[in-house]
Length: 255
Image (tube, rainbow, N blue to C red; front, side):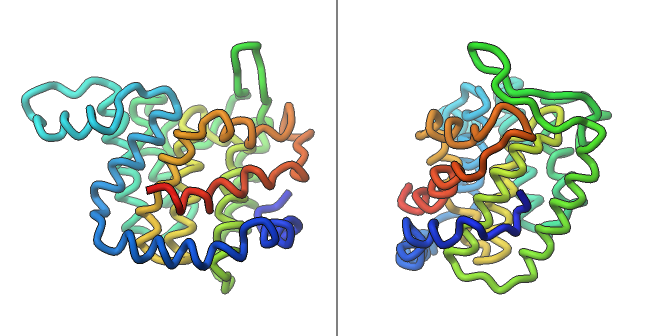
C-alpha cells in the first residue's frame, strides 16, 4: 500500500474526520503560549520511553536543572540525541536527506557509526515475549522501497490537504514506515518524528507541540496492537488500519 492511498479516507472521515477541525481549533488555542523547547523535550522522553528507556519526564527535567554536576548516563544521552534530531527537523524541510540526518543524530547510542543515518543491509524482525512477531522487508529492497516512499511523501507535501486529510496521511506515513522498518534500530523513534514533521509541514510549526508521543506511550498496548497488521511485510492487511489511524487525532485531546 502506498502512503498516497486514500482508500480508507471516507471511513476515517465518518469516524473522526468531522471532529478534527474543532479539535485543531481547540489545540491551536491551548498551545499558542506553550514553550516549544519544553514540548520537544517531552516528545523525546515519551518516544524513548516507548522503546524501553526508563527515564521519565520529571527525572529528565531535574537532570537538566543539575546539568554539569553529573555525567549523563546512556539513557539520558539517548534522549538528548533525540531532542537534537527533533530540533534539526524543526529547522529543516522534510526530505529524505534531512530525515537520514535526523537518524544519524539520534542513533549515536543505538547503532555503530557506520549504520547511523543509513538504511539497513541486514534482515530485521520485531520480537515479542513469544518470539518473532513481524518480519520486515528484505534488506536488498529497503533502499528502493524508501525511494518510492519519499517520492510519495513529496507528492503529499505538494498537495493541498484539509486538516482531516493531513492527519489521515500523517498516520498512514507513520504506519507504512513502521512496516518497512528501514533502519537497524531507531525505527519507532523515526516513525513518530516523521509523522509529526509531516503534520508541521502541512499545518504549521505549532504541531511540533502535539503530545502524540505521550498519547502513544499512555496507550502503548493499543499502539503496538494497532500497528500489527500481519506477520510479515507481504501479509499486511491494511483493511485493519483504521484503529491505528484514529490514534493521532485522539492525541489532540491529550495535554
